[in-house]
Image (cartoon, rainbow over all chains, first blue to last red; front, side, top):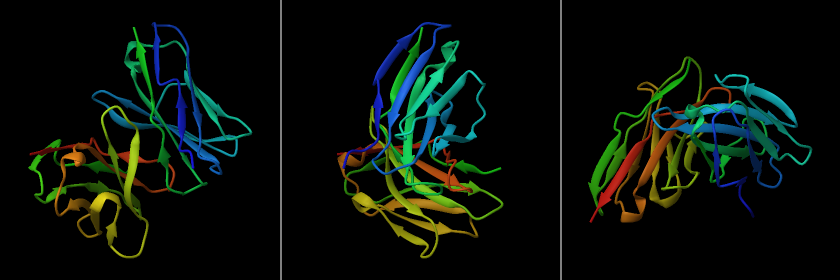
Length: 112
Length: 112
């Protein structure tokens, strides 16, 4: 069974640009989570989607947004990129609410 | 608010020696607890989890952890480590079963 997949693996952008990161959950999983792993800040919860709806978001500005599609895949959009947005963005999926989260390999975003 | 403290940023240990990685959490309610491992340039892999029931939890790769409610701890142990166990280990807690709060991570360095 395929695990959580993320694309692209690496992304290089410049300040002010927009970045779009994609995540495909494990087959049958309906919940998708996004986390940011930035140097010196550790792993921080960003967003949670379940059944197409945003259920919770972490302490991040509104320029971090996303959506979940009918096939349960998800996009994370980061607008007006700043240097400090450089990080590894991890996506996780779970069977549903309050189920164990399984992580993908991540997208490494570098903002120059 | 929930929080997780991993007391050691790095733990060096010789191959075949036992190891304990410490994790303490802060929460006013019942929690679910997890240990994840991250190998270089990869995502997170679930090692083990505590949801309820027996306080001694066994995971993959010979790891186990013990939930101690009175000490609010969830320390990870392995009786004999291998070079391949060299990685970063993250303890995580969730109160609602959805938003994971991670510790800062412990780098385990296994030496031959």
